[in-house]
Image (cartoon, rainbow, N blue to C red):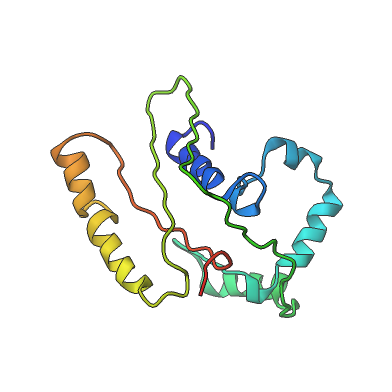
Amino acid sequence: RHDDPKIHVLDLIEEAVFGRDQPLGWDTAGTPKVIKAQSRQQMIGYIGERYFPNNMVLVVAGAFDKKAVLASVKKYYGHTQTQEVTNFLPYVEKQKKLQMEIDKRKVGQAAIALAFKGISYFDDDRYALDVLSAVLGGGMSSRMFNEVREKLGLATDPLEERPRHLFPGRR
C-alpha cells in the first residue's frame, strides 16, 4: 500500500481528518506492528464478534458457477445467525484548524489529496451530491478529468471520492 502514492495519500488523508486515536483514522489493513502482535485466537475472536449475515456483503464478479457459489455460502455461512454488532468506538470530531500530512519519498509520482467535511450519511441532499460528484469529478467523462488531465495535462488520475461512514454522520 505504501508503494503506491495514490493509495498511500488516501490513507494519510484519513489519518489527518479522523486522527490517529480513532478507528476511522487507522489503516484498514493494519500496521505491520499491529498485525504481528495479533494471535490466531484474537483473530478468530474478532471474526466471531463481527462476521454475521446482517453485517456482511458478498460480491462475486466474473465467470463463476452461481449454484457452486451459493452452495459454498450456505456451507460456510448458512448456520450463522443474525446478531447485532456492538462496541464500535464513536467518532469524536476534534479538528479545529487546517491539518496537513506530508510524506516525502523518492518515488516516480506524487499524489495530493484534499479533504473537507461533507454532509451526513442521512442527509436528503446526498443524492444531489452524488449527481454533482459524477458530473464534476466522477470518472473519465467528468469535467475535472477533462480539464485537469486531458486539456491541461496536470495529473494522470484526478478523482473525486466521497467515503460514506455511517457512524460519524450527524442527523
